[in-house]
Image 1 (spheres, rainbow, N blue to C red):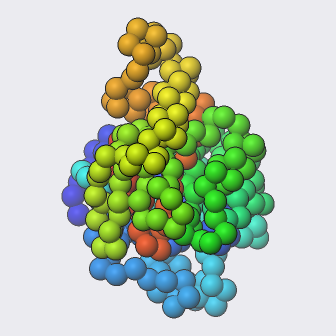
Image 2 (image 1 turned 120 degrees about the vertical axis):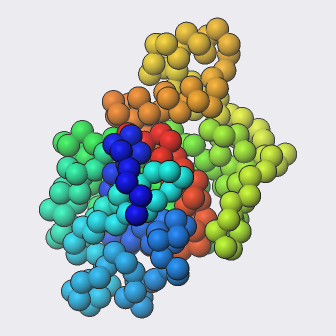
Length: 274
């Protein structure tokens, strides 16, 4: 393994309600980075994270597991924390060690008890945070409804960075990049122009994201008033600072078991997360 300095190391904790897909997301990150040759499953008790016999018996995480993946010149240390309330001490430990908390939310279920509990701990530890709406392929999932529930609970500071290009699709529209990203079954990401059907919604979310970033940084606000826009690098810088201050909480999308959205999420962790 390569040796990384502090500027190229990211420490993240996957937290949230039991069953939201944290362990599967960790597995997908390892697979996308080439750290494992095939993804294990919870059902087959073959995931890298849930290795203990008691976890195999329960079919859930019991201990916080430390994993790592190398991605685009960075090392991402991944703490996969259990979501079941009886093991919340493991979540607290993970949040104290992490630089960023990724709240994994089942897009069909929305904010649940485990989400709320982990949020309380993250607030106490002052850990920067972001949301990952997972399982978007579920017939019961609805992006707009899931986003509304997150914002209803955590406010407008939960800013969407992505939206799905239709129901059950493998394509995600990224409003930070203002590009459409299609994820092939191999996990390869194909970057394309945004389709006409989603251009208006993407433009509106992009403007909301720019305004949210500018509102939290006086220097960027001046640039925004001067130019009427912010560059991608300026937006990344603003998001980075706002995340550290817990002023903004970006919202990303994944279908972890199919690696949809995973590589883009990892790039954001590299380039923006504290």
